[in-house]
Image (cartoon, rainbow, N blue to C red):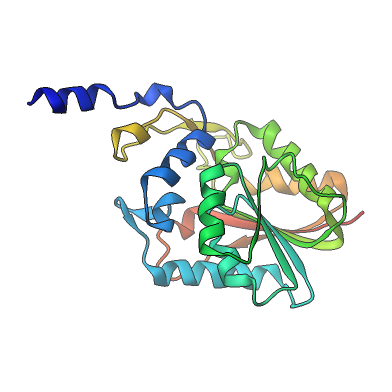
Length: 247
């Protein structure tokens, strides 16, 4: 091993240095060129096939039940894949993400789009201003269930009375023994390269009851929806929730 290689390896960030999923996605956005890889849409370290992404987009669109008169908020939209697909079908779409680099990339991919850097639980919008809201493949990256509830409350705030929210691609908690209604964090060590993206961060899994209890307690209508997306390997272990906001 050359001294140059040793020095380069010594300068690589340690996995313990990654303190949050926000930092992890920021690093992904800077490291990868492919939009799917930036957003961690991959199989065996390779971007998912475009056919799978298109099928996922169409599945989400159908569940939104949106028209060309609707405005949509996409929370945690990354590089703006939904913006790219939906902007011609809607009156307006706004996309947010916690990663500054993701939002920069989204602007480059969608020059006419509207993007904000912000936390999902602290949206910079007035109340009751969106007809539709989608938050896709995001909830498992929250720090805990309290943060997830706070985020749902914030979503309800910005959606109009009678508007629809899609909480999509939620990892299903595997039932074990008598713990049928438990939503808990699990630790997964990253095996992805480069070394600068290795981590010991937690991901949340959920039972549908988490969303059902929230909606029931707050008077919102809901539907728990399965995923039947052709080619999407994780469909059987994920679910979506459609919430009709009642104020």
